[in-house]
Length: 167
Image 1 (cartoon, helix red, strand yellow):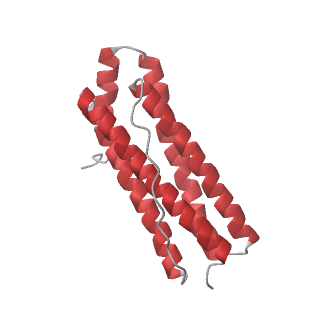
Image 2 (cartoon, rainbow, N blue to C red):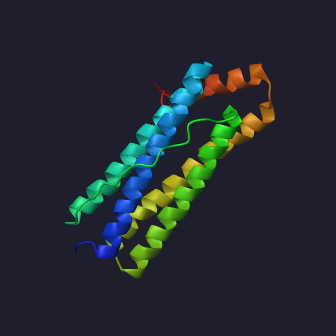
């Protein structure tokens, strides 16, 4: 069963959202790097790679369904933040927005009786729970350490371990 025109358009928009998310996280990584917060920069780079992987899942799904992927221009991401806390608050809010978009896409798939897309989107709904939790936990930890340079140093050290657990 091919994708409906509405699903194709919505999936293409979600591909753009995922790529803009990657672009945002790369921007955040470049915000952290010159501030000697290499762990935070690393965390954001890993997040950017995840977002590209998410975009590829959507691209594969659209193509597997015989539809055309149409890539649009990416919006300029936010470049500056007042603090590490503000950057991670922004990331957490962004993940909540992405969750809302994926849920809307799921609603459209249900309306269209597109069961294959519903299966894909259920994976993304579950993934977004983890994405939101991860960003929110970092926000709460940064709120606990406040303006403490040693606390920020310790949080940054922990963030550097992302993707290396069990390695």
